[in-house]
Length: 135
Image (cartoon, rainbow, N blue to C red; front, side, top):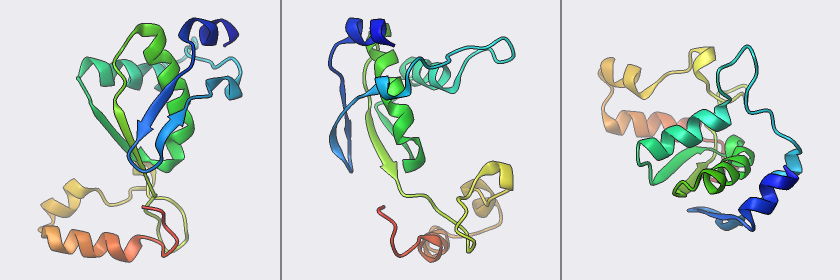
């Protein structure tokens, strides 16, 4: 990490909600980017894939803000463009647990296929957003 930080220099990214954010990937120490049992880490895969696809705005949950520090470092080391980011509040169920695919949370596709209108989807999301959400 020390060597990577020295090569990359000071790093920032723009988040549409947070403004200019100073990247501090060193807070994670030496990050594991590959293992024998996994061909590439989430960090490597999404950073490379976003650049390959020309992504200019990354929109994802606020639970992934920390990962952006690592992604920004990888972008600098690979000389890739830096997209804008927007980290949104998480949708949670009645139990306060975030919705996730692994728990079979409803997807927008499934709602559309079930005949939900855009207005119905927006109303459903409004019901799910906690009153204290920062989104």
